[in-house]
Amino acid sequence: MVDFDTFSKSDFRVVKVKNCEEVPKSKKLLKFTLDDGSEKERVILS
Image (cartoon, rainbow, N blue to C red; front, side, top):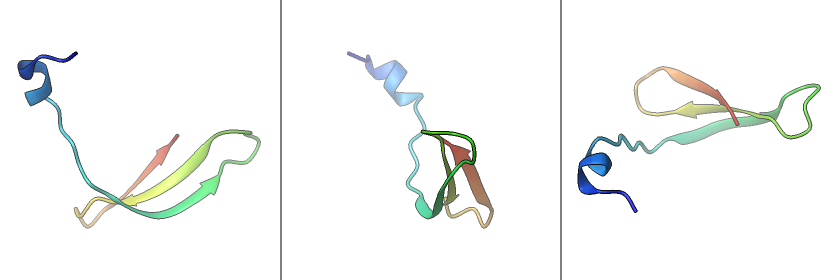
Protein backbone atom coordinates (compact mmCIF):
# COMPACT_ATOMS: atom_id res chain seq x y z
CA MET A 1 0.00 0.00 0.00
CA VAL A 2 1.12 3.56 -0.76
CA ASP A 3 -0.04 6.50 1.32
CA PHE A 4 -1.51 9.60 -0.33
CA ASP A 5 1.55 11.80 0.31
CA THR A 6 3.83 9.37 -1.52
CA PHE A 7 1.32 8.90 -4.34
CA SER A 8 0.89 12.66 -4.84
CA LYS A 9 4.66 12.99 -5.48
CA SER A 10 4.41 10.56 -8.43
CA ASP A 11 4.66 11.82 -12.00
CA PHE A 12 2.69 9.76 -14.53
CA ARG A 13 2.90 10.46 -18.27
CA VAL A 14 1.23 9.06 -21.34
CA VAL A 15 3.54 8.44 -24.28
CA LYS A 16 3.25 7.10 -27.81
CA VAL A 17 5.64 4.32 -28.77
CA LYS A 18 7.13 5.33 -32.13
CA ASN A 19 9.61 2.49 -32.51
CA CYS A 20 10.76 -0.63 -30.68
CA GLU A 21 13.77 -2.72 -31.64
CA GLU A 22 15.96 -5.42 -30.18
CA VAL A 23 19.35 -4.41 -28.81
CA PRO A 24 22.18 -6.29 -30.54
CA LYS A 25 24.00 -8.89 -28.41
CA SER A 26 21.16 -8.90 -25.86
CA LYS A 27 18.54 -11.60 -25.40
CA LYS A 28 15.91 -9.56 -23.54
CA LEU A 29 16.76 -5.85 -23.89
CA LEU A 30 14.55 -3.61 -26.07
CA LYS A 31 15.16 -0.05 -27.24
CA PHE A 32 12.03 2.13 -27.31
CA THR A 33 11.66 5.48 -29.06
CA LEU A 34 8.86 7.45 -27.40
CA ASP A 35 6.88 10.62 -28.10
CA ASP A 36 5.77 12.34 -24.90
CA GLY A 37 4.48 15.50 -26.58
CA SER A 38 7.52 17.62 -25.74
CA GLU A 39 8.68 17.86 -29.42
CA LYS A 40 11.75 15.83 -28.44
CA GLU A 41 11.98 12.06 -28.80
CA ARG A 42 12.93 9.99 -25.77
CA VAL A 43 14.87 6.74 -26.00
CA ILE A 44 14.68 4.21 -23.18
CA LEU A 45 15.95 0.67 -22.71
CA SER A 46 13.81 -1.91 -21.01
